[in-house]
Amino acid sequence: MTVYEDAAKQFDKQMVPPFRQRIMGRRLFAKTTVLESGETELNYDKITEMGPAGISFGLKPKTIPADNIKVAASTLKVPTLAQKFTVPRRTIDAYAAKGKDFESAVRDSAYHTLAKLEDDLLIRYWAQDGVTADINGLYESAGNTEGTSSVTSTYGNMIIKLNLAMAVLETDSAADWSFNLTLAPGNFHEVVNSFSTTGVSEYDAVLKILNAGGTGQAAILKSADITANTGMLTPVDPNGECIDLVIARDVQTVPRNPEYNGVDDPEFLVFEEIVPRIKQTDSICTLTGL
Image (cartoon, rainbow, N blue to C red; front, top):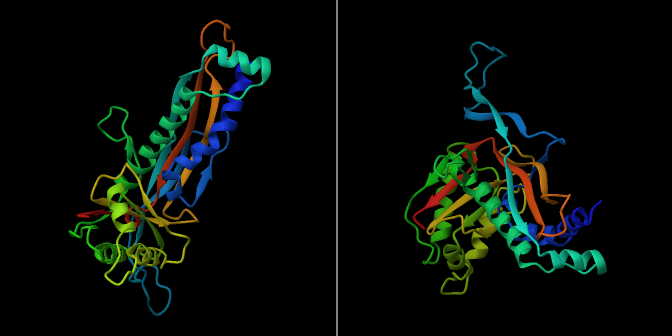
């Protein structure tokens, strides 16, 4: 192992734990699917329509009054998210000679920008041309929207909004989950600081509604990827029936050129291969008018 390969491993040891604390999008996925080494795509069935079951006297496959559950065969390609960074040669030399810990603002910024890119992908979308989405994240995949005006600056409005959104989800038989609520930072802070005239916390009341499904611990979260006065409900789905996170390779660092010449400042690459899989779009509801 060269000193540069060893340095890359030390970067991972130092930076991956805080990287995982910084990212928010992963917290919305209760189920993670890890692909076999070398796999970069995944075939799966995506539910496009789910009708009610039927009941009759006796099993009569041709006449039983039941609507179909329709699926579409889908192939999910896993993109590579990456950021390149340069470390001063003297820093590498000091590590090689004395085993000194790395202190590099450039390295820290590389992990920070990769975390931001991951959140953009998981929560919103990725467009190779910057315009047309190649991969939709949670918000852009939502099959439901609740648009009634209910501003979070007034106590009780977030509770009203959630009740309306749950009614929308009920129409698609998609409300039987706990739900995470993701808000724009401004709206999040309004909910946190919202109290009735008798001191009742709206934040606590909202959490109670979100956890009513009993499928897991729901949370109220904030994200800069959510625009002001909007939000998103996503299911807490530990079995991955509606959504899951597909990982081909988790975040890691490699030297861009292991055969470094020892003269220039060495370059490193921090990268990951990760993608959201949305099986039931109707389980996600966006909120506007907040």
